[in-house]
Length: 134
Image (cartoon, rainbow, N blue to C red):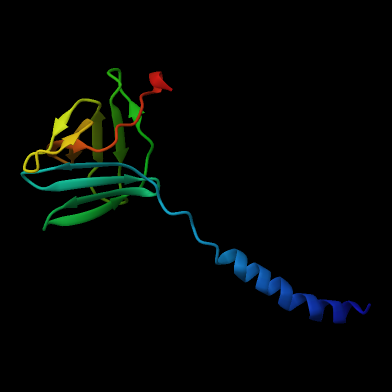
């Protein structure tokens, strides 16, 4: 078969295959934990693709995901920093019962969030296992 004819026949098929490969959906991010607190109202959604920090009515900031370290007491410690002068975000989650402020809802973990010079306390929905438990 003529190489030019073969290329003419195969090129559209290869282009369609490449286009379909590029259109594959990315896997949806997995929510690893949600920490929230009141007075002031804040939340951090820790997902497999990043951490979303939100203060109700004030701001919402995305931080890159960083897997947790575990301190000597077995607490999960997430640390992340955005580009530029954004403050470091540190979220410490401990496996202890927590009761949500206004709602009275029970959570399996407590959370301490530090962003720049501000620290807030709240509850966490999921507590990662420490390295010792793995």
